[in-house]
Length: 110
Image (cartoon, rainbow, N blue to C red):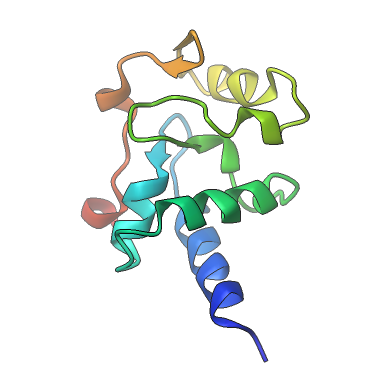
């Protein structure tokens, strides 16, 4: 039987797997969409575990200001930045440039 935490993580992964190529969303936006607005940190924990999953584009989830706060979970390299830049997202000083134009809100899109 799955725990509530496992179910929550799976729900996070389902939402994150739908983030379009070249777009980003935030931990908080996913939490709000799932009806747990105060669980942004838990979404972050889920994303930490999703880095190794090919079906979840964890690199597309950033903090509410567009900062690549999860970058350390990509092997301590610039991999998160490189993956986003490969999708046409500009990054400067570990932050998404023109964040609003790249922001995907699951509450509006799903």
